[in-house]
Image (cartoon, rainbow, N blue to C red; front, side, top):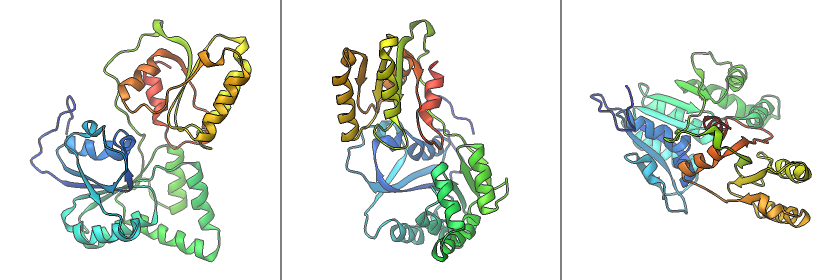
Length: 310
């Protein structure tokens, strides 16, 4: 079914689609795969609902998934029991069940769903990375309890109709770890909404840009900042940092600016920007996007940067 101009496609055979996300929902989730997968299902004519816990922040970006139903559940017993009770009550009403990550509560939901509704379809988006792969391998060869956990995963994933991973490397890892066929495990790169405005290479500025969670081990932004300040006497480029930040990273950045003359005007921290059009404008202006991560599953921002000529 073809999607045109971001408008909903009429469907004669509307399917009931449920995406389960057992975390507090935030704005960032709506513009990433958690919100966009069920939203695209809605646009393609399905009765689509995102089932989740309610987050603390107001969803100012709900217009990005206009038409998608969001069902908030009370966090009574935690993801394992809450998901169990939800599936018991709703399994027969759901045609397609979609989950994120190979977590125990998701696997319990999947097995229970297929036992109650064998004709229903299950899509598990693994969204794995190097660390998760290492953890799964450790379960295989760990203690008796760890091996029991792995065995339960080994049989549970077989209830899925489709398992996806964000890279072909991870597809092969999943197939090897769980001994799954290529029919069940597929490569599915994470998509993004492109900008409506074309970038101009001639107006690119001498600017490095980083977008991500500053101060986390995974994103490794300190490496970029250190490299920039150590070489700033050799060039006249600027550095722009965008994203959430830990207090430790802000302290680290402040000390760097005090240490180097002219640093304040050449390195700017813009905080969290949720408006994707603004993000695209930032990328369209910069010449070089830097991704210093220690590991990634599928860095959506990398694709966004490529689309804007970085």
